[in-house]
Each structure stands twice: as structure tokens, then as C-alpha cells.
Image (cartoon, rainbow, N blue to C red; front, side, top):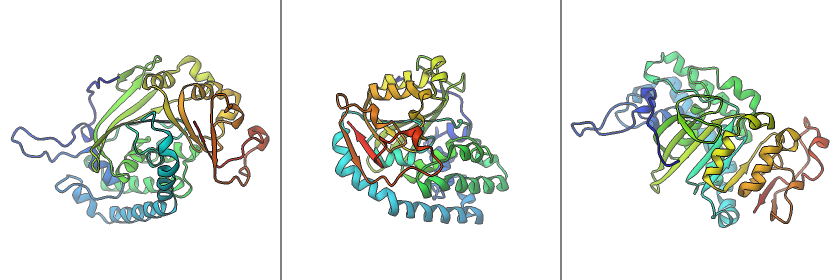
Length: 341
């Protein structure tokens, strides 16, 4: 698990900032600059992407992203930081792994609640695709990509969650497909830098293999926080977690077992674990998690027995969403946010 196997990646993300033989800094595009470009943030001086940031469409994109993230920080993220410092941080110190199943590419909230984690594991149905070299794309394609990023991120920036049915369309509409553009934006906006990107797959036993092979594909992103110099690793895996799929390929769960007990995070999980077709992942989380932070869409309270869990609830619960069947979820759902220890 500690050995990183080098793999051939598109030059855009394979070649990170390095020194040349002559000792001069390379002017090749870095993954961090790609993330900052997509996020509407200034790229490094001398980056090949720097001229593209003078394009009127990018300037408009930058203004829109700055406005959206500023409002989000004031409305939600800053409150999360305060609550986390007072309530969450003191009780999750036994693990530095954040496991965020059903969350898709939402690194933004994973980092907000668990900024001290050294390892993040994200999972969703949405695919991972390699990122092409932006310098090879026509300006019209880049403008379309920026517009699509704004559209695809609108739900999470305004309502705090992605909608699965929309993600499949949004993440396949432009030249940059899959979840990585969204993840890159969140990495840049949280102040992180990317030092390495590997495209990987999982074997059924949870082992990592290089490249896209088999049915569970993903990405491994090495990060550094310039403010603290903390080194972090972000994994994203595209995988089904239903009982039917896990029976034949439990790769994601086997991989997570290798990391040890994690702080599980469940948000906007579509009430999937209220269904009998998700018994396996629900049981695994209850057995293997060091803690569980969730809203009411995660694990039904009736499974959080007092012999194993201490339940703390926060917020208020005004009732079920109008398009959901309350009977299918059960009347024990009474909290907007729960912390299980």
C-alpha cells in the first residue's frame, strides 16, 4: 500500500513542477495549474496556461467562481469550521482517514469536516477519465468546459450536494469528462497543491494496479497543503456499492479495510442504506468505522445500537423531502445531523 507504481499519464498531469538538468524551473503545465485554471484562480507565473487566463470567457468564469465560493464560505463552510473545531475534532482523533461513500467527487465538504485527515477515500458511480492536455484544445472547447463546470457545480455550491442523475450528463458534456475536473476545482479552492496523479484500478481483494483495468477504476492524487506542508492522499473510486455488485467484486471495501478504521462521512446518500439491497455496505460501515458523521440520508438510526454506538444529534428535522416515501425510510429518522462514536 505504501508503494506507488509510476504509470504513463497524459503529459498534462504526468509532468509536475520539477527542475530541469540545467537547474532551471520547467515551464511545462502542472496539475496544480490545471486545477487553478479550472477553478478560476490565477495560475503560476510563466505557466503555459497563463495567456488563457486573459480570455474574456475565463475572466467571467473566474468572477462567477469567486462569487459562488465566497457566498458558500459565508453561508456554510465557515459555520462548519466552527462546529467542527468545537464538536467534531476532539472525538475523531483515533483515525486520520476520511471515508466518504456515495459522495461522488465532493472533496469540498470532506475537507471542510475533516481538514486534518491524511487520507481521503471518495466513491461514486461517476467515472474517472484522463484529463487531456488543455494546450491542445481549441479555445471554444475550453470555454465550453468552463461553462460546464459552472453548471455541474451549481447544485453542490448552492444546495450542498450533487444530484446523481444530473452528474452523469454534466460530467460527459465537454472535452474534460468524468469527475476529475470537479475534484480539481475543489482541490484548488481548498488551497491544496497537486504533486502527483495516478490513474489506478482495484483488484477484487483491494489491491491497487496501475491504469484503467477491470470494473473498479479510480484516481490517486497526492496533495500538499502549502500552509502547513501537510502531505495528503485523495482516492476516488467509481464503483457500485449495491449488494449484487459487492457480492462479485468487493474491491472498494477490501481496499478500505487495508486503511484501518476510518471516520465515515455520509451526506446526501439518497437513503440507499434504508434499502435491503445495500445491506452489505451498511453492515460493513457499522462494523469497521471508527466514527460516523451523517445526515438523515445515511444509516437508519435503528441500526445504531447503544451497545456499539454513542449517538449525538444536532440541528432540527422539519420532515422528509416531498418527493420521498417516508414509509420507506421509517419514522426513526429524526435528526438533521448525527455523530456516532
